[in-house]
Image (cartoon, rainbow, N blue to C red):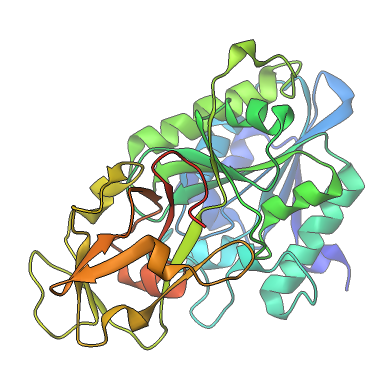
Length: 346
């Protein structure tokens, strides 16, 4: 199957092809789309993917705004819009993935199963053909909270890319089939979590970061004087058992296996001490939870403990990617955690 059966292509699109708003543009898109924009230096290419999840719009908003301005980038730009199909489900930008589909950002690895696997495979082929000097993947966090970056490699190039958007970098050895694992092709690759999907600040951060990414002669500078990035290493991924139930309430009703307070997202990137309760568990206790490290070992007892039906950190932790969306909490994860210092828990 040729990529043209899977992807659509736009070359140096003019404003009249883009629509007056991101939603109007999305309505005009029929397939996952590849966009080429010619730069002042056509010998180099930088790549950016976004909308891999159909309910994470900041990258789409930023790209539409940037394309309308018709700025000439420093180098050729390759943009990849992956999750067009779920994004177009009514109401637009409300579905992470197709109802019976796979998470596209878990499909960038063999055997490239299903429609999402075919899209991921085609996108990787476009990257292989373009040979970009670097790659960004713009997302929104599943809950509200500050922006941060994620990478599988912590070196000066990855920190320089991170600094275009944020001063927080999470480095993980966990492999899930995400696009950021393209970094293993020796192309510096960073995922940018811009903040909440409904947060205007997240949309603005994505736009301003894209301007820096496209306009600077060098985005991989090895001079560290221009940035100060705090690195958190190998977070634990706390997951809820598939059959477990979760509620977000001020007090537990006794009907759910896990209850978090409605304002749990305020914990994102804050330090939580062992004396501060996170929520409540039901009769099954912590058996409904797993805490997976990068080497797939179980570390729950080092992350959480229960006292009188309430959940507390087992040690001072810094948690992030906490969400109040029960669908994402069950299908993806509850949150990630590192030590308060940013070091791995295990």
